[in-house]
Image (tube, rainbow, N blue to C red; front, side, top):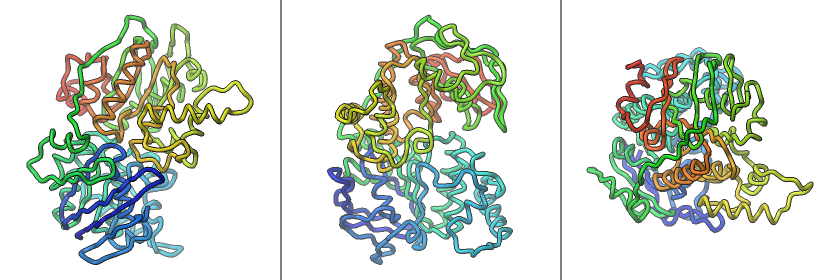
Length: 487
């Protein structure tokens, strides 16, 4: 299906999200949409799928002018979108998520639908069990479920908004192979990202956005420096690697054992130094999340002890850890990190300690405006968090961190952030390390782990490696360990 967008314009108050966008996407291509955080990429896709209505402009499908009034209307017209955060119901089974919103009456033919799930799953080499509960699946598997569901509904255009955030390298490779196969079958794929290497690897053509405007369209062969300049209007440098690790032990783990319904880790021994950054590498679901939640006091180890500044914290709850200077940033922004329906100001009120009986609204507004400016959040104090782009939700989550912390635990800290924003965020994290805070983080980006870690732990099949010096290892060596080789 050919898509033509003509003079699309959309504003949210003072924010001009899309400014006179004109773009044509041919059928059977993989079209990249590249841009910095808040550049207007997601807004344009939400207009195309009926989540938003444009203030002005027209949409043409196969040269026929249409008005898309809702996401349901978009699917009927053959347009489906895979969002940054999976839009599913975790407590329900795969097959029930598949059937939601479809016209099957009170008693749909579940056996027929189950066979369709298995057929599509086999066609694309996915491992999707129709009777599995969605809450037991990884983010990558939930993405696969949504792709299969959209294909089953008959979409001819598949939009993916930052789909590689929070998934492993192997899952990304499988996703890319699936998209190439779909494009070869005539589907139009729109791949929205801020990651230069991904659009270079995957896309047939790329449109670049900056501050709500379409600033350039690029065909292969691609040049990274050209993309960076179009995105930011300047060149961006990563900068030198710096370490603030001291000799003082802040956290000591002794013979720690962890387990959940499908994984068991045992005999983890580790000392985390003040000012040190430890990166956690591994396939998604290999235990990194368990490890972070244990360090935050959100789950108890089944064996062993946790010492903080020499005091045994084993079995204490999250609030005790939090009051000792420990903070946890989850990967699920709108499920665990932020509260949909609440404004940025209300979030900052909740995140700060208050001794007064009543909240000082003027002080709260001043604090919010200061954080919005400091973290360059594209929003206002009264913006509800679900109205922000994914990258700006991540900035808001990071802005909620209290000033004086000793240990910061982060799942995918630069998830949804463009390269300039990621560099800036890590510069702020390094400042905290300079003030003796320790950081433990997990990321699916091995380059990020190598660039910012002092030491690295690799998780595989219930095993945790001894700490690896980040300076003396490579992406290839980490990849071998993550894949189970070299143990």
